[in-house]
Image (cartoon, rainbow, N blue to C red; front, side):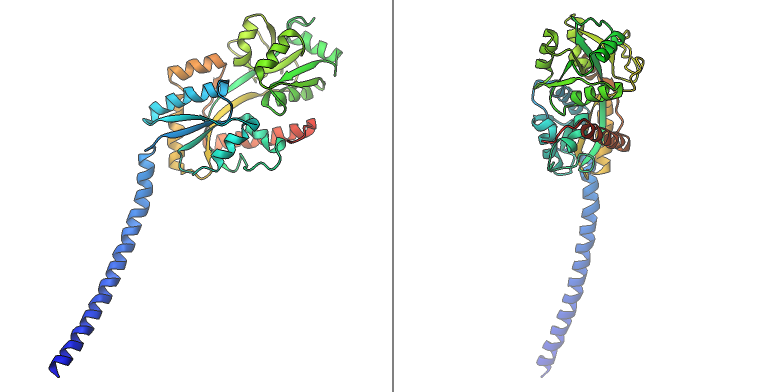
Length: 343
């Protein structure tokens, strides 16, 4: 009998110890999980980037956007001590590349070289699979490229004032070229015409290269082009630059007046920036912005900016987001007012 009672007591003691052990073990596991969670997240932020970063250039290789992406990638690689790989995903006005980035993990390892063209996309493409102003984190602007109004050199007009008079006299009869329907330069020229209360015939091209060829030959009489793209043609005497679209005169062309100086209430520049999928941790966003501010001030990037006529602008976070939202409203209204139909 003593043996049976002793056995039952030992069994009850064992079960009590087991319950206490299980509770202690569970508590230890919970504490361990908590201890692992936040520090691991902080550790991931501190170690960022711990692997190569992909910078998506949403336009074809070889253009000004691709050139900018590559020079920024090299400089950013140095600042972050990690490889930044440029991946070209062109098509549909940059929206294919942008859509891919919007669907990527929000971990800071997939970035987008964005520009102002993407803000007009909602008005130009039906069933767009992302919202640029909501599905992206605005990391940092890179800079702004002023545009220049260029004309065929054989026109009777030889400066901005005389060209506006010529355009008014031939209202609705002149042809203007652009890099494509809905592209930033198309919208810029249409916006300029709206501000001047004038009209002209739009002739779209597949890029600024073929557009410039026809401008030189006289098939189109005028266009608005980026300063970097038009610079060599103006300096070579193939076309005439008669005004700039920026708020102030461009240092490299001090003799060219702004359109505002000529009485046309219009200004714009083509901005470029770095965006990421929405939801990237604020600490990682800040680290990227700081690295980009340093990268854009390195000699290679400064020289690249000079060749493009690009002016440094590294506003980040909310300031950059405000630019995106304001331009989205602006360009959607312009597209609708111009009667441009979405694809």
